[in-house]
Image (cartoon, rainbow, N blue to C red):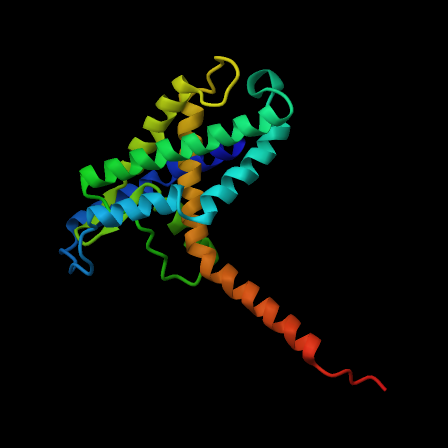
Length: 221
């Protein structure tokens, strides 16, 4: 909850800059179209990659459920194996609902939510770009509000708040809390997409250096 509040506060503090970017985008000349609009098949592929076909959704669900298993109250989630399986059901259902609403809203509003990395070499600017991209989309027509993300975050909050999948009682977590956590999830996804090449490069470099150390002959007498 604290992390969700922190990200929401950051996003709210970024709104003046976002408004300035929107104004600059509106006054700027139309940019050349560099890519074709997403087809329905491509949008479906993006949705399934975030929910069903990729390994990351399952890994994130299992890890987050394991963490929440120790933090969630037993009266809400049950005990023993039920606690963990209920967390898995809640997490996976929430992912399906959130990204389903996001994909549907993006298609209806003709928004392209594919992440566009920052061209900056500064870590803080890249992080700010990733977080701000949760609310602002850079398009060939200029900067626009990412309405699909807002609709998905709030809409999923409503659905999960009243359906409470996996929960053992009817205590609602609160739509505001769920909306903030959904925005946090979008922001975390953007941060991962921004720094994923750096992480992969670091891991490959580390493995390469380890192999070199293993293969290097011992020079000791």
